[in-house]
Length: 429
Image (cartoon, rainbow, N blue to C red; front, side, top):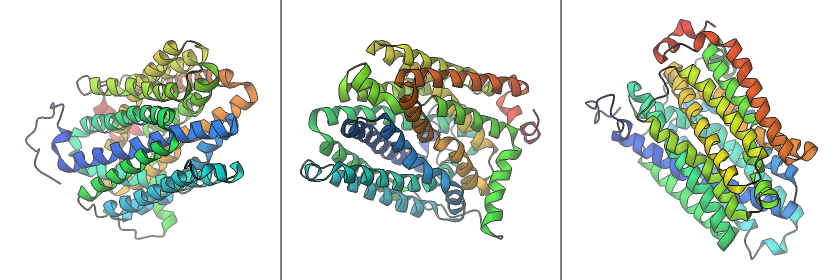
């Protein structure tokens, strides 16, 4: 590991950024996330425009979640035993290929000559390929992050890493909605392809990350080690479960095209702003957390944050005023960012180096695909009960989940971060 910042004090707000590999890592993550989030916005709006179906929107999430969940454990196993930079290059090339295909079938000179019965399945299949890539991308980046900075500045690194992701999540959707609205889907895809190429360039700047895990038993035994580790740590399993169910039921973001097009009537430009404002709330909160850490009593703060998330979703569901809806989306992002920082820091500190890929894979099964599964749930609920009712129901279920978690984990509430990361504490509730 680089020693260029060994002399930096632990209280330095920019401590993690003083490491070259970490800077390349968050740059790569920024450009990749920008392209990914931008693509999610324009594909969601495009699918809804040509199908007029909320269920079709839900299927977008399901097509990505099925492979992402189905081979997540294998992705973690491969990440643990592989060189990470080379692995990321292969993954990024697959995502670039999928985007190129979607770019081609939606071209203004091509789409009019293709039947909708061909365009939509092709897009769904490319989203499926993105889900395959994600099963490997998460474990690989989780390991690179852990080895790019010293352990003692993980909280600072987690804040900057999450902030870069959130900034990309602001600019990506906003750019997607605005470019789509003013210049069309072809121009939007051109920007997406450019940013994917930039992320690949930054991957080349990373140093090689050789495996620290050499499997000595069969693959099933290796995979079960990661599962066993997570399920034996009560803190990890409760943190993952809390996020899984809150995001599953609070997946209002998947229905934003419906709100933008039919309820608030603000079009694709408004959709871009709505998608961006949530991330704006998140990134401003995360920047504040570089100074004011939420890790003093992390479990208490996590429960408060998820409660705020649920209340924001309910408020958004009731709102019929665009600017009030933006306010609730802003607070939803702010509260969600707090839970991301807390959960990410706890997971990094509790996971051994030789199991990071597999533990990250289990986390992906719980959390990484909860947005997509939540999107399918939201689309299905909207079809059955109506868009507004499904959002209010989702926020209410989030509050029920956090209440159950509170009752089951009261012993963790007064604990400091040092107490929580003590191994025996992780097994006692």
